[in-house]
Length: 608
Image 1: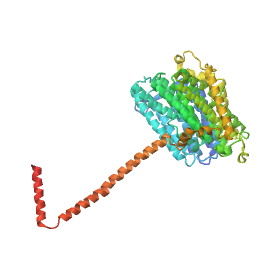
Image 2: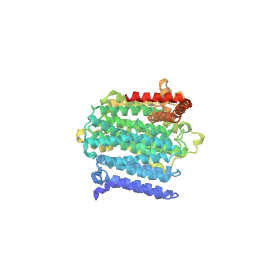
Image 3: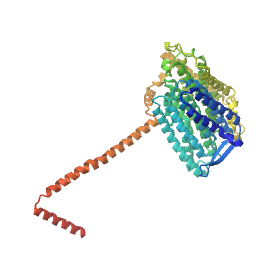
Image 4: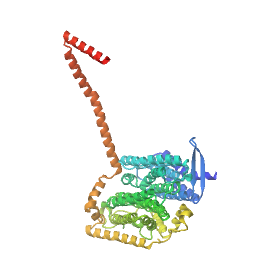
């Protein structure tokens, strides 16, 4: 009976989520109460289960499959993180979503997503995990769809992109099960040989797609505009990073033997480095608060993939620590964006400015989380990035340089965002702006404080992460505390100071915080690339749509050609032939006799 407690993080949010669907339309408070109770109970259960080791299994589907769940140090850590973010964002949503339409669907999808995410983490069978994983695709579509009127296209785009990656995941699961002879995650341990590498890459595609990495990213900036803001704080900022990086770590550390010298490791690091640079470069030029943050949600996952891809203990710990840190400050940053939008009615940076004095608590939370994501010491992002830097430098200078350049542009874009939104001259329109309610401020304050605590006392989160690797991989080394490589720290500080000087020069040159990076945006070569990028020229989804349209056009023309042959050419040829036959049948006896003799000759020739 005791082992069945592992089911509660799945059952409780699911039960309350289904109950929300039954609440009549006018009972708004009932929906909010159910969401609060579900997430609060779920958090209490996650705390009670923390540091527990529980396994649960029973026959499922009558096909020899086991509905097997497993809670151990790693999954318990992720479950607690999911429950914490779920509760804080639910508390925030009670105020933010109060006057929004589709409230019933929002809270129902919210709670069902919480249930499915817990199922993914607890599943110890690849097919069971896939069941919960695919369920998240449906709630993803639903939560985007209930946003703005134009959200259906974005929801469809997200469904197609993630769905294609999930097809790769399905094939990878089938191949992994075939190679290992089992679907139990805890029992799989395969070498990265020819088939093993193929299976790994297919599973990796599913993992990095869920985490929001390139090239499976382009729906996220669109969702930032169209979806409800709590969705962004919950899914792209928190849950997707936790689930995608959790699964990537499992396949890299447990299911396959990823080594630092393998080409698969280099592939992972390359994806991470490319994601860091390209996404942060796009974040740099955005003029919408939420869209700028959405590109950073993509860029930061690059550090996680890069760290884990190094296959070095310092990199893996750095990647996992950055996963938690990113979920913290990225969720809080989206919540600050929601507060700004709630108070001012816009997220357009061109219409903001000077609101820091009107929203001091929101501004303070923004500052803390902005310096955290930029890697400023002694905040949490600094320590996780330094661990990733250390591993990246050991694996190759090019990977380290990509990570450092990413940090420069991250700091530059947040200096731009903070200046444009909170500093400068206050417009007449925003003079009546007020700070949001305490219910919206409390989650931001808690997360901002955690960014400080996880930095100053980084031994707390790292102490929970290090056991995941096991004593053999750690070899007695402790990665908490101040970074051991002083030169990396010095270079980081120089890079951050460079970003600050770049901002000061840009503001002085352009006279505007919003235009502080225009000298980068409109640089001779970059301006052309940026122009094409903003027109979605490089968007993999748009490229796929154009290819599909091309094939459909070719198919249409081929179909029309076949129809023309049957409906036009054949008819015309038939009429022409019959006209000639009619002319030959002129009633002349000698003509018929000649045709008869000619036919007889042909028959004789054919028989001979």
